[in-house]
Structures are given as C-alpha cells and as structure tokens.
Length: 505
Ligand code: MCA
Ligand code: AMP
Image (tube, rainbow, N blue to C red; front, side, top):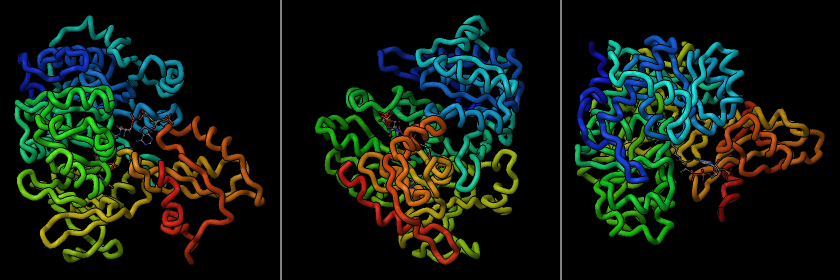
C-alpha cells in the first residue's frame, strides 16, 4: 500500500544494516534496527486505539526512541504533534485540547502532572524517558517488528506544529506528507547530501529545523547522524572531526567561535555548515570564515512553510542574506497595505508559494484566510527585500515576535501574564539584543497607583505558567508606555531605548 512519506524516507531503508544514528556512547542504530523499533511502536499506537488521521502529542526528551515515534506515526498514518520539552502543564493543556490528541506521550517525570489533563481530555497517556525506558517501550518490546504500513496520499496530514499567535492562542500548522517530502527532497539535492554524509545533530527534534530539515534530509539522502541529546559545546568539539555537516541556529556558531579549541583543523573534515531559524550576523559569518575557511550557508524558513530560501552551495554565500528562493518556491515582496508586488530593492512583506506551504491552521479558518491567500501565497510576517543580484534580505518583522536562541516567543502571551500580576497596570514585552541568544526578553511595566511592584515576586510567578525560555530576563518600571495617536504601544521606541540593557551579558 502506498504511503509516500513513509516509503520515501523510511521504507526504502528497510532491511539495510546501514548506519543511521551514531550515539554519543559509541553505539550505532542501523536503519533496519530503527525501522523495527518504529514498527513495534506503530503496533502499540494502533492497539491503543489510534486510527489514521488521529493526533498524537509527544513531549519527550530527544532520543532514538523519540525519533522512532515520529517514524511510527508516519507508518500508521497518525498526525505527529511534537512539543517543546520546556512547556509547562498549562501550555500543554491547550495543545492537547486544541489538537484533540487521543494519545499523549511524556517523560515519567511529568506523568503525575499530566495524568489529570490527559484524563480530562479522554486521552491515553504513555511514558517515554530520555534513556528509552517507559511504558511505551515496555509495550513495544512485546510487539512484532514489522507493521502493515497505512495507505496515505501526499495530501494527508503528517504533522501539526504549533506556532504561537501574535494576538491570540497558538495555531496548529497542518503539514501534509507532500509538504515534508518536497522540501526535504529539494534541500538534500541543493545542499548535496549523499549517503557518505554524517550530520552533527544537536538541535531539538520538536521543531521544523531539527525534525524536518535535519532528519528528513538525512533520511532522503541515506546519510547518517551523530545524534546528540542537545547542544553541548564539549560534545560538538569532540564529534566534529567525525562529521561532514552541521545544521544549527546562530547561537551554535557564536558559542563555537568563543572557544579557542574550535579551529580550522577541527573543522577540516566538514564540508557544510548551515544556519537558520534566526538572523546570523554578518560579523559572525565573517569571523567563522576567518577561523575555519568555511562560509556558513544561511537559509530561511518557517514552521508553516518549511524552508523557503537558501544561499547557494556553489555560488557566493552572501553574509547577511538568506539567498535565493529554493527550486519550486515562489517568493515576492509586497506592500503590506495593498498586497501589490513591489519592485526589487524595495522593503515590503515577504510572501511565498510552493509545495512546501502548509494546508492551514487547524480549526482556525479565519486565521488561515488572513495569512494564506486564495492564490496560495502565504504572508510570512517577515519584512524583506530582494537585492540587485536576487539575494533575499530579511530586514525585520511585521509581526510582534522575539527569537531567542532560535525559539520563537510571542510578547502578547507574556504581557497577559505580567498584566495580571499585583501592582501592574500594564506591560509591554520587547526583544533586546543579547550576545548569546541573539535577542532576549525584556518586560517593561507600568505600576498601578505609581507604587513600585515587587519585581522578584513577579519574575517568580511567571514560572508557573510560561516555559522558562519565555521568561523576561529583566523587568524595568516606567511611568507610562509610549503610544502613537491610535493608542498603540510604540515598541520601536522601547527597543531603541533599551537596546543596550544586555550589552555586557
Ligand atoms: C534554553 N534557555 C533559553 C533558551 N534555551 N532561554 C532563552 N532562549 C533559549 N533558546 C534557558 C534555559 O531555560 C536555562 O534557564 C538557560 O537558558 C540555560 O539552559 P541550557 O539548557 O543550558 O541552554 P542550552 O542548552 O545551552 O540551550 C540554548 C540553545 C537551545 C542551544 C540555543 O535553546 C537550542 O538548541 N535552540 C535551538 C532552537 C531551535 O531548534 N529552533 C528552531 C525552531 P535557567 O538556567 O535560567 O533555568 S524551527 C524554526 O525556527 C524555523 C522553521 C526555522 O527556520 O528553522
Ligand atoms: P517559526 O515560527 O519557528 O517557524 O519561525 C520562523 C521565523 O524565524 C521566520 O518567520 C523568521 O522571522 C525567522 N527566521 C528563520 N530563519 C531565519 C533567518 N535565516 N534569518 C532571519 N530570520 C529567520
């Protein structure tokens, strides 16, 4: 039975003892072993009552089993919903409820907290720990190692990835099998991945970058990955001589450059470094080239679209740009007011169309209609321009968004929490420059009755509801917020005023 995504990325490796995952302890997971594990998990999921099209939500640590869970969902036709391990129970409740997930997989450490939420939603709960143990593995161990792959088409959903809303709650971006296949196939070719490549994989696997870009490209090309649980500088330095490629957010590269052990010689076995998810400073690009002789290849993507543009493999990788639209992807710069196309060299909003563009937001037709035009162009919310040589430059954002270390943070969500704190009349949350994370979160508070609120208590109390990476790293108190004549807070003024707050961080 055809299942385009499974057949293309996984099924073609069946029965092969070729390397897939090199683990930090020196052990190896072959394609065959990986697929057998995935098949066993697929049986557990089906027996647990999940049917094709049902959603499975997973908040689990990065591990070979966690990756096999993705493969199992693809094989069984289940929509995979991976969740950031930093999310709190409050945040998870929304994702589970909104997606209607019938099964939730979590670390045993979160089981007690999540069990009541799962019960409330009539969802089944299984555990999967970082070391591969847990109820999911126990049950999988008793299952057959082959599974009758479920029939799917390219139009069927493969995954939901939630992107936070600038005004309301998070939206579930519906990604089809075809979205994932087309993008990985394009990238593998564009970046010249082959079965000889070894990717140094230190990204999380709950976002597009680590899961769909890094993993799907590796599977498409039959390459292998050095699969690290997270970004750990010592491990990166130790394993780089065995790798040929790496994908990372800019923080990976700035951290590497801060270490003198990261030398031209250490990077001499590498053929490609890719950066994305956040802007790579031109200075970092240049410093990296001076140190290693490699020019980092920067690309640009989104959860809703996978990758849209990339610097060339052979031609000039131009610092401060995200390159050209990928083959099959159309990109135009439009006037935010009229939607009309603007000439090259003019700054406007970036719109993209192609087989990579998602199907819409789950059960949010209005939000889908606002961002995805009838003609298939998706309004990214990024501001950019195309230079005289065709390179795309991202110059800003038309959306209120902070990107910290590659994680997206929506100020509105934090403002709602801050506004509810005792002694706070209102707040504005902005992103300010930060040497390690690129940007970080600053909360600007207006006190009630002019009396200074207890800032320590406020910082503490954000912990219960918001993931740690979203917490303001600093709070400042002002008499009032700058507003324009329409009454809208002028965040650009605040950003300028506080741009040096973390200058020495
Ligand atoms: C961890 N912390 C953070 C972040 N990460 N705070 C702000 N921003 C972050 N990104 C907090 C922790 O809660 C902790 O707080 C402290 O910082 C140190 O934690 P630690 O675990 O040591 O941090 P780390 O492991 O060094 O993590 C930093 C990191 C990581 C390596 C940059 O965040 C990372 O791997 N980021 C990649 C994100 C990613 O994959 N994005 C792709 C999204 P405390 O100590 O105070 O408790 S997909 C996407 O954007 C599109 C599609 C695209 O184009 O790719
Ligand atoms: P996400 O919602 O996590 O998919 O994040 C997508 C956003 O990350 C884009 O809309 C951009 O604002 C930003 N982004 C991704 N890659 C780059 C890049 N190379 N340069 C600048 N911004 C980027």
